[in-house]
Image 1 (cartoon, rainbow, N blue to C red):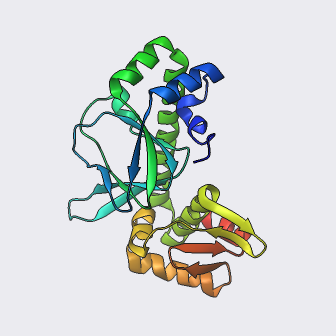
Image 2: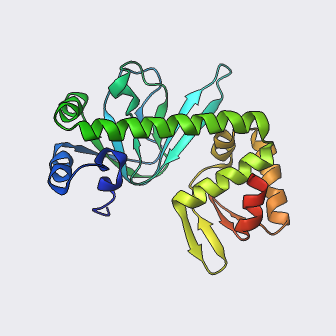
Length: 225
């Protein structure tokens, strides 16, 4: 694990070096195998987590049993903070997409930090505000964007977080199945696969197992608008 990954999480954003070190010492650690569920939607569970290695997906089940993938999180990203301000059943299921490691802060420990370090509360509120903006963007995309546009936007977001720029383009090893990628876009697998095949035929991307290479980022950006 990169020792700086944990302190890049929003939880640490406004802490000085000594306070950040103390908070890190207060956190436990969990290692997850690929496919292991950390918590399920509806469970009463109030810990906060920071991903330090691997990928975690957050999903919700629809009325017809279809899963809606809300987010795929990587190193330095945080989840579970909603329970700090609104205790109650979990609103999503957290599952390891790959082998992963997360750091854990118990609710009581976090509340003590919030009392002694108001800057931590500011960081958490900033995280929640950013989540709300993303949720608003998702709703707007579902209303105003077609599926290819949403596919392009998700490819760019995955590239921003997991991309590795090479001579031939941006390699994105997202580790998602075709069904999971469709859930992230919010469309059927067939429709998403059709959009991806069209992008590949145009020379914008190259499809690979659980990964994609963006060959023409500018074209993908134009399609995402």
